[in-house]
Length: 436
Image (cartoon, rainbow, N blue to C red):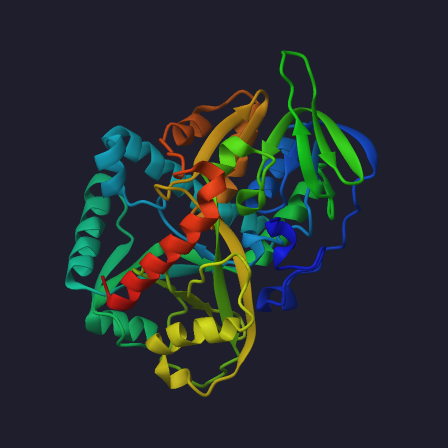
């Protein structure tokens, strides 16, 4: 089963509101014949584009290989949220990795947000401040308040504002939750335009981008001085280093990675432009995410369309009626939108790890990989590309700090990931519906 082609047409963006409102970016050529480069980057999402950009700016000859279009995968389909911190909160990091490691990982995550803002600014892609976190229980509200206090006290981060039920309801335009917080240092962005903007920056720095160039095999160097060979359908790249940036679409080209990184699907809908209707919804233009395991997340775009993600399925094939999957979750938050048309509906494939922390690794000689961003990838995937570029250039401190986070194999490795997906999504979906 090849997830690159299971749900999508080759070389075409999905029918999302992002694809309909994207910046112009010309089709790039397919790789032909034999090419030579210092580094081959596999994957044209945030991680690969950031790696290509930062490597090219360091003077390396870079060839980026994307099976479809740049930003085709999760990078161009997601909720656009530039979240603070790592996927796991600092209390989890401290408990599992120690205070010093937690502080280092928090600092890297702050670098990630700053990097996205900087690159978005260079590409003239607007970024808007604020992500609210909506809690479903008193314990979650108490934890959110305690975490805000800890961040201010121990991490010098005072941008998280705790909210009671009334405050959160006023901020998001819904009484569906009992409180939470808003992080004014977090932000949101048009995700596909961010990817396309990064692609333009990478090209401007000298990186070569090849689209419709599916990597199906890599012959890694085994001795010092040997070259690696990245094989595509219509050509190959002979190179000194390989950067793997395919995330949920890596498939079997990196078994050591795929045993620890599991693809999952998520679904998003967009309403018609709301104009002056429903002014109570997101009056301060923040994004929102709730505390469900299968998270609901949403934001408004420039035309005041509500873009809402949520819902789970237990197969890798997208459902025929994505609107029907997501609509109940949207209406559980905003029942006033019951008669509003949903103009777009799309699915996407991201990737998770057992501990929900990204997996940084050296799967072969002269090969670096970063994946498994677990729904926290806009910032961290972009940083991952820069950290891999730094490591190739001999400055591996940041990469090694992320790689030091233990990442367990999924039980049964890559061969049992699909059955685990069925069981896991059924279980966590049931927990969310029961409010556990």
